[in-house]
Length: 345
Image (tube, rainbow, N blue to C red; front, side):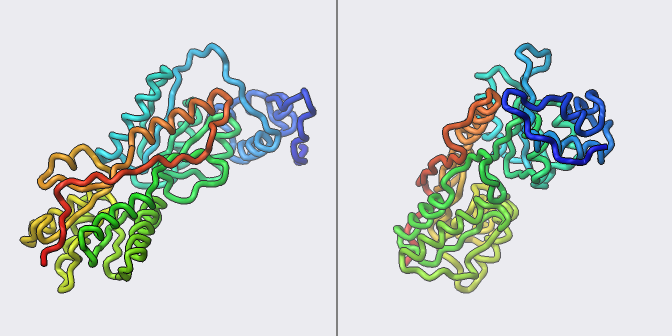
């Protein structure tokens, strides 16, 4: 059996399933099974065929007429909040225009899909995949590319590999605007409760916070920089710890609206009024923030627009076209409501 690399296809003679099968020493149906994500192929054989597919540059041609429904896989690392609903709404809006259906998946808090889930995805042969705060390893990216299944990231957990289409928002600018707003009101002891340190957007918001303090001539106090989990309980626990300090902050910038709600709960239990004793700024501008009392000052992140943009990029790639740009960051905007005011005294 030959183990030499697959020869580069000659001009006018692109790699075919037949040539890949001959080079791998397997049958054409076996190559077809690998391309279709079928599990009934030995791991060693699958790896050999996958490598030849990638090196040869083989790309599947989609049939013009297909009995399969047009599907887009939308993958969340977690899907238990209104935040996820905003993303789903944006993707479904864009998919409806393309007469495509959306398949939802949740990774149970993991940022990388497990092997079994990935095999099921390949068997579905979707038009494309949108991953929200989720990642793919190098092998998974190669397997999708070999099958001409495009993928786009939304709010990546880490730095995306070069050439991978990504949609996000101006997180650094959002953190800067939130903190500058508090400084403009006269606050100097300002805390931040962001999301996990492993998430790129979380770190970017803290970087914006630091830049605002430094440009305002206010030292960054390490004890006031906290990393939570983007959820209410994280905001509550960090809020209780911060607000029971003898030198408690007069303002808190929470890296999500849910964490801001947790801080509000902690302040209420401690008998502190908002904004009289404590000013709070959130992040996302979820629908609930306008109706709670007091209304939450927050940074609006255009979640439905981010999701729709990612879906449009998937459809562009599925047509064999390249998007105009591969990295898109939509603008954030500070929305001032009643939860912020000048500090007392």
